[in-house]
Figure (cartoon, rainbow, N blue to C red):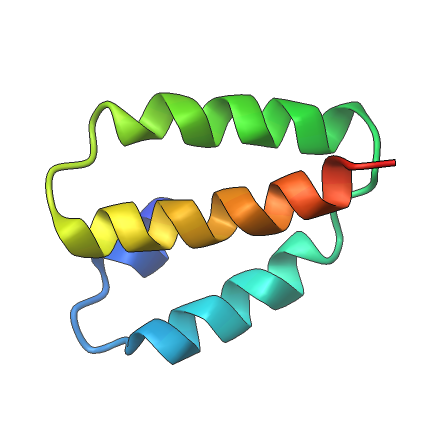
Length: 69
């Protein structure tokens, strides 16, 4: 889902953030959030463009906020 949205050329950053904020709201505060953070960190290695970095950083910030007790 993240890859498809991040690659959508007509989707403005605010739209991406609104969609991901909603989707990430369904992640619990347990191991799911921790696993998501690990996966997002791994994706930074393959990110090639600043828009991808921005999108990953936003998702990482949202996921980390949910993973905190």
